[in-house]
Length: 80
Image (tube, rainbow, N blue to C red):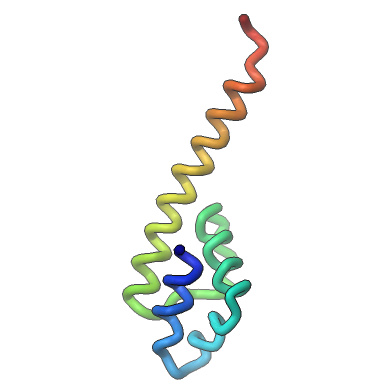
């Protein structure tokens, strides 16, 4: 959902930043990097709507990654 939203909102522009998100895979890469809070900076959101979805994907990614760490910790816990 975030990939599609970023692609839709960032295609409104007629400059270089809108051409970054012409490919769905570029949008997917951007959301993946944003969700893991790595933030390489190779793609950036330029519109206000795109930035809102970037923040939402960052918060969602942080939540999902922390849930994954907690689940993995519980699975690997060897105490009875």
